[in-house]
Image 1 (cartoon, rainbow, N blue to C red):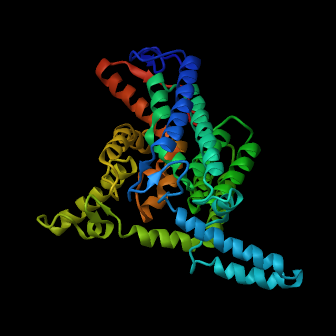
Image 2 (image 1 turned 60 degrees about the horizontal axis):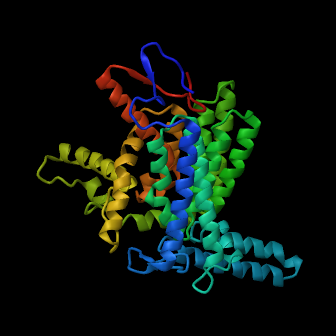
Image 3 (image 1 turned 30 degrees about the vertical axis):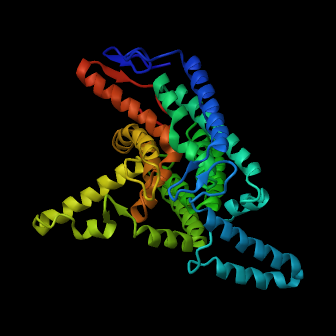
Length: 413
């Protein structure tokens, strides 16, 4: 349903000729999304696709280049400590726990335990790939169907729904075992819980539980604490200024504590990201200035703006390959970026404030590290919604009829 407006147009009506009824559009997109994932999953078993270093990727190959080796090492780290605790008498546990916490200090860069636990639970490795590969297939289907249902409720048309259903990026993370797909599952759960009409206690209780789980999966989960703090401090209705400051501060402290535990991994991420380039220039090059023909007072501001623009393009997937990926795969990924880039811009500058805060908190680590489209994948469906809204607003400028969109959860009047 849409809100009536005497001088506007309903954004989920036939402004452009691509609309079905809401339920029919959702069913069509959901069925295609699931069938597409099944086809890719089975198809790559028959004909694996090469990754950026040329190794075959399929449910039968443990060749993910996305931090898999790091989390396998983390799995060994935690497994060794579990063996030490189980073989030691209870009286030695306090001392062992102190030593264990020292190993989790920022001086070391072991990852959080949940991904390592998942690899251990399914005994994932070159000798045994299918059990966890099946779980990733089911999780990928669940994530996309949940997003499609949410997006359809708030006005995304059939073309947008089909785009979300068939985006290539999520399929790559379905095949490559990493933290990306489980994190995307937690992100959609966070949106469904917090961006809802549930009671405040229920929303915050579940949101905090998801934020803790996400941080124990990958340190990027701290961004959810950051969002909750921003929302509580600036947007939460019905609280006094003092309450907002106190609760926002407590959430920020919780996030800092979680980050300190795995701070070594974050520092390692920042250090390893510093060597990555954007269209041939590192971040340091941009900071120093990449336009030597211009005076310094103009060179540096333009270079900094260019770095910001380059990071937006890389987040959308409009970038060259970091390795030797087959060029058609690079083009397919870039094609999705043509939609995601306008969605990013609209999300930061035109979306309701709660969603701006979510995107700002979610992408905050990009300021310190690498901007890659893998970090966009969890929020990509939301960006598709924003891209369609931008298209309707531009269409309205030409037609003189302003679009009226369904009100999003937590959107202020």
